[in-house]
Amino acid sequence: MTLRVGVIGTGAIGKDHARRITKTLAGAKVVAVTDVNADNANDCVKDLNLDAKICANGHDVINSAEVDAVIVTSWGPSHEEFVLAAIAAGKPVFCEKPLATTADGCNRIVQAEVAYGKKLVQVGFMRRYDTGYRALKAVVDNNKIGEPLMIHCAHRNPCVGENYKTEMAITDTAIHELDVLRWLTNDDYISAQVLMPKKSKHALSHLSDPQIVLLETSTGIRIDVEVFVNAKYGYDIQCEIVGETGIAKLPDPSSIIMRSEEKLSTEILNDWKDRFIDSYDIELQEWINSTLKGEVNGPTAWDGYAASVAADACVKAQKGGIVPITMGACPALYN
Ligand code: NAI
Ligand code: ISE
Image 1: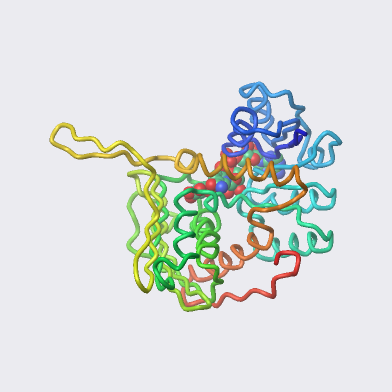
Image 2 (image 1 turned 135 degrees about the vertical axis):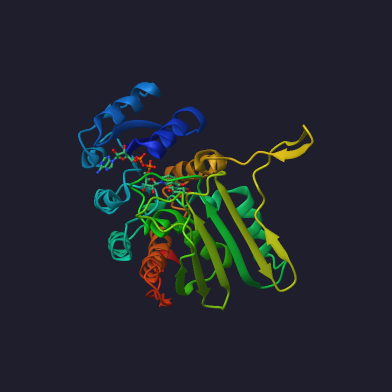
């Protein structure tokens, strides 16, 4: 059976997901797309040579009889509306991060899914599918370095556009760490603090960059995440776990080590699309496979909610102070 997919938002990642479904993955085909920018939808269909209809809006995609499952890759503020509509239509939905732009929005999705009585939502936290992060998780879960005590992370982008605001360092960028560190440690956060170091001259005037996010978990693990989105030199993701008996570090993507012109050198990637290309492929293939079986096996709406609760606290903490993080009890649907 082939899963017939509708894509809402065919910008950078929407078009890339449509490409991987069409050219790389098995078991699904893109049958409908939409974008508020008609050129983007047209280009997507034309460039990928899709046999797909172009719908007037996201709701037409969701309600189309030919669409079995939906991918939401529009801008963050529109995610909640489309995910809620997909749940109302009883259709599985893969939503790129953030699930919604606030914890309240994510909670409305959790409540709708709980009321529906079956998991339909998966969130695009692709790092959980990265080989390096999966190896790190195996180290932690198999107690190879004892209990994790501290975690040092960096999330560096070469540059960002002028629409990128200070709070997006949390809601758009560090949200990946907020999810993956909770998954790695099997722990939840209890507080957040954000420090603003000396500002880079490469950051636009309205943006505080870099930032340091400090988190504490319920078992007392202390985490620091450097978010630096005008780091210039490349796209660089670092994560080092300090345990009671050893240290485990996320590997860098493999690259040729060159000895040439009196230099020892290796390449650093420049784009999230390349750094996590294998993770996106595995993530969407597993989503297709699970969806065909009527299951959700990836990050759930509850995971989207948990990351968003922490993100809300971090955004508050950008103004100063240590902000507590509290979540209600996890509904049975997600246990
Ligand atoms: P983008 O701006 O390149 O593309 C978004 C597209 O959605 C645009 O073509 C826009 O016209 C369209 N759109 C916006 N609102 C819409 C609506 N209401 N209905 C239909 N189309 C609409 O942005 P990008 O980088 O592709 O990001 C999209 C989403 O994916 C964001 O939530 C972002 O955070 C997430 N993302 C996730 C990544 C990951 O690593 N998992 C990487 C990049 C983006
Ligand atoms: C982007 O939206 C992503 O999700 C990338 O993975 C992240 O590195 C980047 O900072 C975000 O803007």
